[in-house]
Length: 367
Image 1: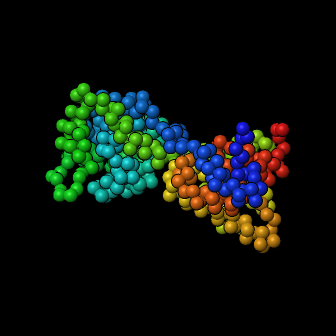
Image 2 (image 1 turned 90 degrees about the vertical axis):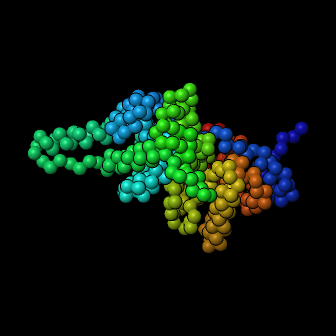
């Protein structure tokens, strides 16, 4: 039994004749990566989250003392307490910032709330370090007779977030409004602090519930946080092959503009001045996003044709793709294969990338 060929191994004529077979071949190679996600450097493992929960529970005396002082003490001991408070509140960091803005007229922005949330996840001593630096500056100012420094913006914004969270959690859910459900209508915040104390004191795995809520829908919060890393999985795979083969390449930055390219590819080989190949590397599990990514790849092929028409040398346009999203749109895959002369690679066929494209002209290492 002969092994099924892949589109990049066929001539243009063969590709036309066997197009449907080649679409099926690419689809069979696509991986449904939605079950696996990169962790990233600040993924909150359950044990770490539980330790933060226990820190908050201890500092607040099992939520009997749910005050700013108690929460700040917990935060100084473990910055990840911020994520626990946010999970009790049941909001994303930007939503929490918007609540502080509307309730307290705070200047905490959605971006600064995201940054603070991330820094507290990454470093459990982050708040302690910020506060220690501030206290040191205060002490130095006192010793030298200078004006005392203002409280850092980070701590001011943290104060606002904690203050509005305490107010909302203690207040609980207001009277029902016809046709609407309140965001705090959860078993642990429904009737204010009593609900929270009940959740923490009864035989309920509350830390586990909060952890699941923190990850969101399950894992949606983390998936959103690492969405860029998902795309980088394919870029890293391409980059690894190029490095191992000793191929010169130029990897473009996000939203970078480069000369003569209205839309920059992810890789120019060996460079953008006189490429012999350009690569777009994309992963998606969503068919709508896949449509947009296919459109980007087709635009690179259109740009290549315009360059050739203007008298510049031709080059390969290569797609390195994966994810179930690309499997949902058969016509898009037909067009992609035809316009790229079959040069569509997946994680399963990545080892065939260099031997079946003009990139092989620049190989300096290996066999």
